[in-house]
Length: 522
Ligand SMILES: Cc1cc2nc3c(=O)[nH]c(=O)nc-3n(C[C@H](O)[C@H](O)[C@H](O)COP(=O)(O)OP(=O)(O)OC[C@H]3O[C@@H](n4cnc5c(N)ncnc54)[C@H](O)[C@@H]3O)c2cc1C
Image (tube, rainbow, N blue to C red):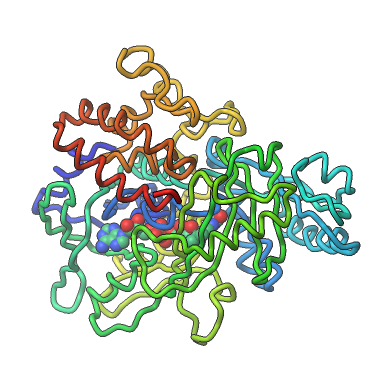
């Protein structure tokens, strides 16, 4: 993960890649891991930072999707449950087994969901994370002391996976590099290059220096999520939009709202969706919504009505109604849903299955899907790339490929450093070896100063936002606290990157611009 070295590689004029991937979210990074681990010459280009888009803004679930089972999308749930099991096996330092409780307020609720979830368990087969079961009223209250008790009859407990989406993204980037792939952040693809009618490469601009590169590649993959239409239109300017962006928001609350390690799943909200309140990094993440929006952006903003809806719904299931004052951070993400044939369909009804499209000039576009299914999406996409590029056939090996940092002997539930896996000790050692890196940057969020240096040296963090939003999750967990520590992060980065006061000033201004959307009292 050395940006300077990787830029040198793309500066070589005669170099031809087998596969260039545009987009460094779950989908693109999954493709990079798959292609690199099969031995193809692979380059991934991300316009801002790995997981800057939707992939840092999920509900943090590795799940089959109980809701999709309700909707009858059995094949997608089956696929997602298999992938959930594989993710859990291949990245035990990043994915934990999370218990969810559905509180039941009518007499039939408990037995009804117990039966439904047995099907979910059966579909997971050998890759199941534990059986679901009915809970009495007393057992439900014992597990969730903060649950609304009026009218509570009992509950159902079931299991799904939970993870840190951005840390997973960085680990995937590292895995791709471990297998010989090349990844670059802050590099935007601005044009496709064609030889005759066929795509033969991309033009990319380094967003930090302004340098432009022409890159040759046998195959180009468009994995740009909600931005996919823009890349498709670089190829076919007249092409109609394929993506329907649907916004989902989350709020972060203090751990006191869910003091034990059980999550709450609300099976029917007033808009007939599901909602979750899940323990995450010693906080609680609550969401989400499903709001059709007109325009996509890199920093979508939560609507007032969405915030009200999430807080109100959470309040119906908790003893204490959370208010805006309790919200530590709010973030919005956009689902890159494939536009349905029937345009009147509500976004909640659009299938989350992925679609792969190949244009006449050979651009492969992958849209839709979920974080949980990133591996299978990548396998399907690279199979198409092999066909299109006429590459020597090589088997996909990602089903049993350990993700960078793979480690079993780590307490992924309680150790805040667990997502680093095998890298954990090296990061802690930095703090002991270098005086300026000793101690906490934020004791409240359990972030060490050495994590900043590590992010710059080993994880390609280039901006204060890269460090505070995605290498650590400070901005997402507690926006005010991230704001407080931003100047110290900038100072550490000035030293690491050999920058000056002017750079620091610009960085802090840029960070403030982004961070203000995560607070209320701007
Ligand atoms: C609110 C919400 C909650 C969700 N919760 C879950 C969940 O709990 N579990 C789950 O499994 N899934 C969940 N999902 C779905 C999942 O997050 C997405 O399916 C997944 O993150 C999409 O990844 P992606 O790589 O396709 O898109 P993105 O993450 O958006 O990545 C696309 C990338 O392409 C880059 N890009 C765009 N244009 C260019 C260009 N010209 N040059 C270079 N780079 C470019 C962008 O900067 C971006 O980083 C959720 C989604 C939402 C919105």
